Length: 144
Ligand code: HEM
Image 1 (cartoon, rainbow, N blue to C red):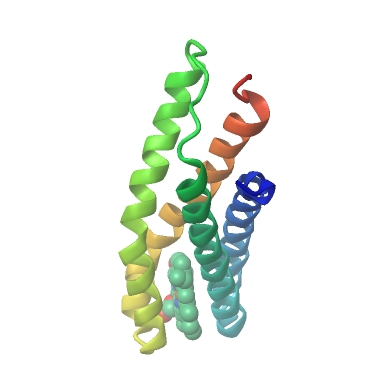
Image 2 (cartoon, rainbow, N blue to C red):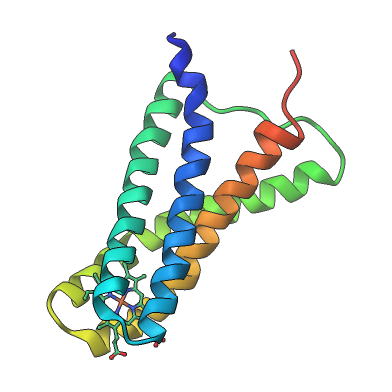
């Protein structure tokens, strides 16, 4: 297996962090009624998340799962974060498409209605993606 595969978790975390930051910036734009800046930011966040998904799938195809070490208290905390991250990552997919679809159709009232769910859930997924990375690869890396 080529060594570049081992760089992918770092890239994935960076892409997760990027999409989270862009989501927040995009949100502050729409609060100030800056529609074009809001649109551009949220499309950029979507691009970062899509790149993340591709890179994540490539990594797990070649490498498989990485086991978190058996550290009391910390491991259950890690597993709860990982579980909620994965479940919500699946839940937000249709929500993101619906949010973008309604915006693209100019149905902004409906867009706003669904976006109020999409935004916090997507942000949770991005932030917990970075937390999972920090715990697994930086704070408590598996030995050997
Ligand atoms: C999936 C990406 C997107 C997310 C997560 C998102 C999120 C949001 C949120 C949370 C609001 C409500 C803000 C508030 O509470 O005042 C909003 C409003 C709005 N968004 Fe988006 N947005 C996205 C994509 C877009 C796109 C591509 C456009 C294209 C123009 C757009 C245009 C608007 C407009 C015009 C509003 C104001 C609606 C109103 O208050 O009547 N959004 N968006």
